[in-house]
View 1: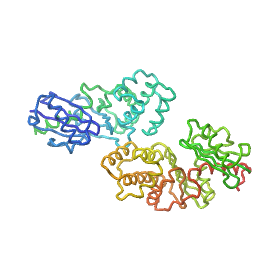
View 2 (view 1 turned 60 degrees about the horizontal axis):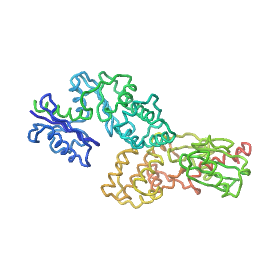
View 3 (view 1 turned 90 degrees about the horizontal axis):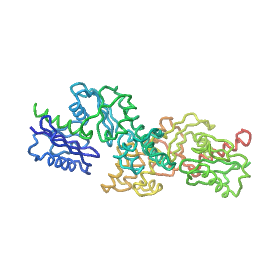
View 4 (view 1 turned 90 degrees about the vertical axis):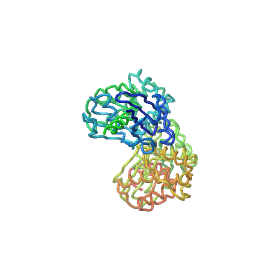
Length: 259
Length: 262
């Protein structure tokens, strides 16, 4: 029985196709202006990768910001539930998921059955989301995907005094003009974001094991900064942390079929 | 006795020269160093008054860069200066809302200009002049135009976010959907007024209320704020941008006379 999960976010769309415990395909792309367009395209990509056609998918669950606009999803689930489900499927010992997306950040506490016990999220202030790093990458004229790598050479993070993205952007520009080390600036930015996300997560009490999902989890500098801010180890997931929500949706799809 | 006030802010610098009445004033865009801004704006104000630096017997500095002004005899907080300046212009003033380029302050005073309560937002760009600057740039209009075009709004839009970054995305979306610029501008001015009203309510704003700082020139924000507060905002007869420097000069006048109030 083949199932699928489709996660249409604000910045990226992801799709996962599964048969039993096997992931047949997982794809990520940049979102189009309309969620249904993103959904159709990413699902098309995943189907092609798996060598399948849409008719072979017995059940698809949609999730993410654009979940209501996915034409082929038979039901929808919240991102919170999907991230919990996906992370615990990958690593059964997971009790807390910290997901940093392009437009929000979430912390989710789970029981041993992947039920969500508590969660907290920020989507009000951009400075506690992936957008913070995106804006700063632009200001520094550096590729967002290289920020983690560049920051690893820094020994002394520069402390960034402004929280607001708009004010911090000005601060970064003047740090660059002062000739401060780019790696130290980026390291400082990672610590600033990590500090805010850790404060969010601590609001629902930290639990072991912790994993990090979402695009920002691919940033090694951010990973280390968050561990420091939490005062705890974060476990590494084997798979791309960006597909975790879609993976959770696919597992929900398999469960729906069984019941 | 000729005295001066010099207000070096993050985006602009202002100076006022007084001798009981205002002899000269100037507003300039801030330079990269506060001391440069101070020297230049003071020169300009002196020129307007037909005076030289040697003629000034006492100078008070204020604003973000107040501790870096070389020629001041005393540095005083912006809160005290804005209160003093507004009440010098209009003695009935009890509340001043000052919106600067990167902060917003609200202060309530007694009839003698003593500050009873004040609050500041300099943490979040929403609710400061910076918010309007970012939005004006996005709409491709000047800050002045942003205030006036909203008067032509037929069907004002609304914005669901507070954060400047998210509002930017909302505005881009409205522009892409071919919404009239006037309707978008109205939404922007309204969002700005909502943030400012929150600060004003925190200090329990009382009549008479006036505004200082550059944003006071934005008619769209002012009229929306009047609605939100349920009070008329009194218009000051001088440029609202010089209120802080004026207050500094008034304090300088008091100091020069040996602390006796005029």
